[in-house]
Amino acid sequence: MTETVTSVLLSGNEAIAQGAYEAGVAFASGYPGTPSSEVLETLSRLTAIPVEWAPNEKAALEAAVGASLAGARALVTMKHVGLNVAADPLFTAAYTGIEGGLVVITGDDPGMYSSQNEQDNRHYAFAAQVPMLEPADSQEALNFARQAFELSEQFDIPVLVRSTTRLSHTKCVVHPETPELLQRTYEPAENRPKYVMIPAHARERHRDLLARIRRLRQVSNTEQFNRIEPGDTRLGIIASGIAYQCAKEVAPQASFLKIGMPFPFPGEVVQQFAASVDRLVVFEELDRVLEQQVRGLGLECEAKPDSMLTGELSVQSAAQVIRDEQAQPTTDALVPIRPPIMCGGCPHRPVFYILKKLKAYVTGDIGCYTLAVLPPLEILQTCLCMGAGVGQAHGIAQVYDGDRPIVAVIGDSTFVHSGITGLINMVYNQSAATVVILDNGTTAMTGGQYHPATGLNLRGEPAPQLNMVALCQAIGVERVRVVDPYDLQQLEETLREETTTEELSVVIARRPCVLLERKSLGRLEFDADACVACGLCLDLGCPALVQDSETEQRQPAIHATFCNGCGVCAQVCPRQALNIT
Ligand SMILES: Cc1ncc(C[n+]2csc(CCOP(=O)(O)OP(=O)(O)O)c2C)c(N)n1
Image (cartoon, rainbow, N blue to C red):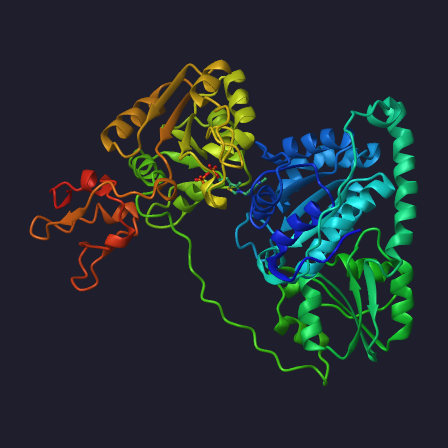
């Protein structure tokens, strides 16, 4: 028996963690990524079970599959693109099925607030044939996360729970309950026909998967996850997630079919709903997933224009699609856009300043350092997916005969995530490019999570630290150098030497993220009389130095609140007009 404890305000992510906790989750793993990162961080505060950051999403899912094999309820979290990385084990785990409930959280990012694409991960449920639950507020996020474990065990299948940025980060009132006490002993299952996916076994398991999905379709056609909310039958709206909230605000009087389980698609409920309303409107964010299913049933419906295939949907977009005379007036709050920039004193900045000086062709990767694509640095030429910059630099170096240094830059967390295999490829195929690992000792871009090279685990406790120098040497990189990016002279000499050798080399630019240390290294003073307005310091693009709007010359004005006294600008200044005291 569970009891309601109280009412609290929880974000979607916190609610998912609470739901997993209430379900008696015994193992959790994931890789950070907006909007999903807070799920594991919250869970680690709720319970003493192993809650882990894995080096990447595939490793996280595979570990969770292992825990599930031993009978434990296991949770995995990742952002939408993380599921691309974990897709390989996911597709076949659908065949094998599970022992302990296995739940995979995918945090999608419509509008790309913090992502390189806005893929719609509902497609994964259809492609991998795994059920998906899609909550629309924090209470549902809690309930669905909890019920996902039950569903997983009942139907012997991993379950996907899809959140989106707005749901993950919005706080609503929820009613947490006390967690289930599962009386389980954990023992790894021995069932080779089920868990060893040689073709003979896998063929059987594929047929079994289809049968499990058929049974799950019956659940989908009940009110448990796909609910008809009767209203004015002149207008019927099919919607899910945040799109449901927007449509509900615009047309609260309408009849709704609220989809909480898009796969298996609830065809019977949709038919029944369509037959009960005069106008049928499908309103959904990103791709036409629900709409295509509805049309596949032979039903006519209205839906959004192509212009709404990208970005978040709002109350106003709902009003535009629903076009109902009874619709409520709408106002979308205008939130000022704050463009991202590298922090004052960011240790990545000097690396880019020097690479620009060396006229390097720089393949980029994903992290704070991607911001080096923006003025005034404008040095990054690529950003594709995590780890790709290393592979791209190798491919370029294999065909390019010119003089420009080919340099890949990659953050420490990204290197551990998926840069290592690319580097092994470079060693094996004798690349002559340079790889710069920007080692700021954290996963800064997503909020400063620990990773295997930081020496701390998710709870901030000491953990074995991956030695990146030894690792590079062990895989066969002969030239590995470590530099302090604040020491501009040493940095320039090292990068000049390493980018002009004919061999593969790795330069590790090591200096903690300024948000990690949060300490001032000195006070920056500006001597206006010595300044010749050459603007070299402004070329660094540090927010602590801005062009003086009064003189309109390339003379800096100092914004001391952004300055950590790193002294890089003082080293750039040819006239000693900038000094650290
Ligand atoms: C497959 C995948 N997983 C997660 C993310 C989210 N993400 C973006 S950058 C990044 C790592 C950033 O850390 P690091 O490489 O150390 O660079 P930093 O931001 O510290 O400069 C992560 C986890 C992503 N974009 N893609």
